[in-house]
Image 1 (tube, rainbow, N blue to C red):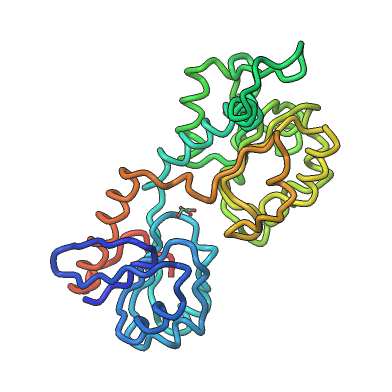
Image 2: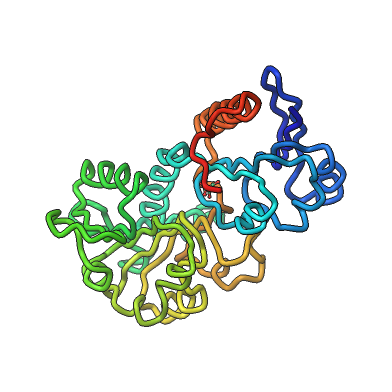
Length: 302
Ligand SMILES: O=C(O)C(=O)CO
């Protein structure tokens, strides 16, 4: 079975003929498509035009959870199956969310820069960090990543509240979105990007956060209106942000968020651990075996 691993990486699995292809190398991608039966997809948008170049394509396997970068209607129209693998990167993403919270609260970017400039301790209270213990952390989302993160945060001594699409009035930690925002010293985003969640955190909602609040996003950039986020950070209403995702990726070096010292950034790699790759390949290879033998796919979405 001919598999195109759409990532700059070599990988071998018994019975599979796997070609790695950088997401930046469209010429190689297009040259490989005519013989490709399965695409192992990471994040570069996959369009109906790409699918038309791949007449043998039977399965688009997302390595990860979010399928917003795949044209699902185009796949359905062409009879191409799409599957994802929810939860396989949840531990890595939850740990990265904690990392970004701590990095923003402890002003890591500013201290890193000071250290490299050979500067000593900052004067007075000009640059003072905050602790997670005792702070209220609001989780936007009630799925597996939010659940893992909640355990980590409670172990540190933070108070954790969350909101989810389905109300859970029996859970004392559950809040309506606006109430969650009003209570959150730190807000962390863990929901998919859909028509409903696009710019869910707009200027009005960001204004509900308490002054000095920190916003963390390891989900999808466009859940937050990025210009409203820049304005809230620049105006000093927000104390900082930790961002692994952006409205446009790869992030534009001119993006104003990158110029702010109270913002810590990563290039959509919250998922990127060796353990995650092992779990990804396990599911992806299993789905190829299922496809070959005509069995039901794991986590089929189309
Ligand atoms: O799981 C996801 O959706 C990711 O963003 C990482 O691939």
